[in-house]
Figure 1 (cartoon, one colour):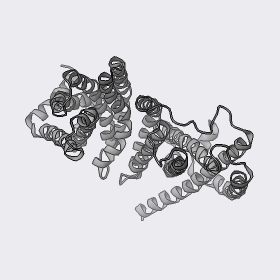
Figure 2 (tube, chains in turn purple, blue; figure 1 turned 135 degrees about the vertical axis):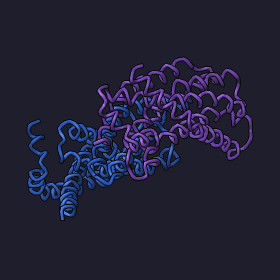
Figure 3 (tube, one colour; figure 1 turned 45 degrees about the vertical axis):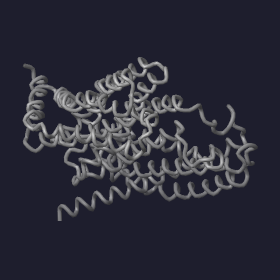
Figure 4 (tube, chains in turn red, green; figure 1 turned 45 degrees about the horizontal axis):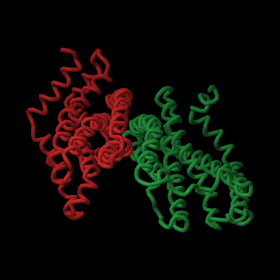
Length: 221
Length: 239
């Protein structure tokens, strides 16, 4: 097995042994979305109008919430030092870490969002569209969030700082993610929005691993 | 390029900036006084906007400088990561709050202009929103560079952030434009019409040069302070 796959498998095994960490993130996602109808009021047409935005923002926060431990645990137990010394590129290791993060947060969030969407009174095709946008958009969140996690590794108050760094960079993904759902609901071009969302994910895929690796090298020095 | 490497030595930079600062301060004050006269008294009120057009003489140059300032942060970040220029880190540390300040001035003056012109202090116009996001990027840079106990770590992390931010700026700008056209039709065009009358353009460009000088002056002053502070910290550690 290549180093890339074994690193993903290792991270997944760690999560599998402590499933509570993922459960807490998903619970946060559910509770946070539930607060919006309580705060805004139960009018069905208002809720259906804001559903995509609310679910996307809540998913964004949930993904960020789980990121501050992404590299911190590896720094503490020495795994990061081994990754820095390993004969294969650190960029690949960074990508593997982000991929593992996406599997344990992005994927469940995308699966859970349509269920919560039902409570907001969304139509079945809009529910599917919502899941599709999250499926295509959450990898970008994991990559940008991974960069923010690597940059704040060892910083004071790293959790809040991580969100401050990652959120402005996640704005394009949020805009096109919610825009795609809105386009479907109002008869716009859903496919074009989804394609831009995919393009954003590819740009993040092509650039962030280098930046994450650079940040990790700084942290390891 | 050779000249930039020459300046990378903090002590050499220091000597140059000490020689430059008095005349630069003097020139900035003079130009600001004359620029304010041009902008507030000499130039005519706009036929549509009235006297509120005068806000533009501060607002527009601030926006230019705020955007250029982030480009400067990225350039300094690159020279720190590539050549490890010690001065680049200190100058980035000095420049980020100044750039954020110009960004805040741009947002505040725009908001004051928007109240009589658009009827609201804030509208979710594409330009306003992307300026606000630029302000957030500045805040992230400032917070990250000061978040570490070892300042060098913060400098290098902030340098990487500035480079990633400068790649993302056009993407953010494009997506915000897209988002805005999705939600509402284009807002009132600034400075009305395709061409600007010279009676407005001359004070505008004058103020742009003046505020650019002010930016350079503040950054140089603050860089000097950062050099002193870093020396003091090193001396304290050795003592």
